[in-house]
Amino acid sequence: MNRIVYLVLLNLILQSCQTKQPGFTGTYKGAEDESFWTIELLNDSTFEYRTEGHIGNSITTGTLIFRGDTIYLEPTTGHGFSNRKAFINNNDSCLIELDYIIRDNQKISRDFCKERTENWTSNHWNLETMTPIKRKL
Image 1 (spheres, helix red, strand yellow):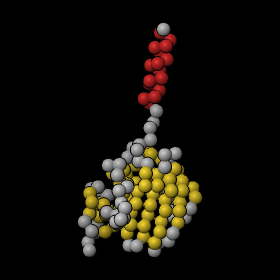
Image 2 (cartoon, one colour; image 1 turned 45 degrees about the horizontal axis):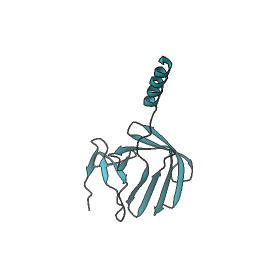
Image 3 (cartoon, rainbow, N blue to C red; image 1 turned 90 degrees about the horizontal axis):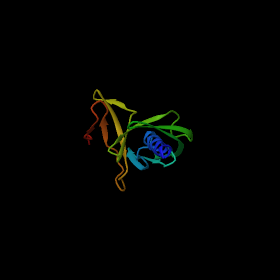
Image 4 (cartoon, rainbow, N blue to C red; image 1 turned 135 degrees about the vertical axis):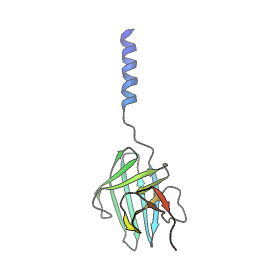
């Protein structure tokens, strides 16, 4: 009887220690300046990153690496990007890209969101304060 209790406890401990993949899977979309991006995060820890528009049309696939709320896209095939890309998960609905440009002395990046259907336009974010920035028209 004691062995059964120990085995059950050991099984419960092992299951609780397993690293579980966060629920980041799904399709994230973004657009800017007549360029469109789609990031598909798949359940098997792989991704597909598609670009269309003035920057060219490409498909890049690879492996996902999860570290806390950061997702790294490690490319294995394609020409959309050649080095690892990093994103911060924002409320499980958007990914904020950690690549940035400097504008008005701020590190500015864009997001890719799940719920975009007709208007894919990405929001801009100040990466130092992690706050959205209103676009200048």
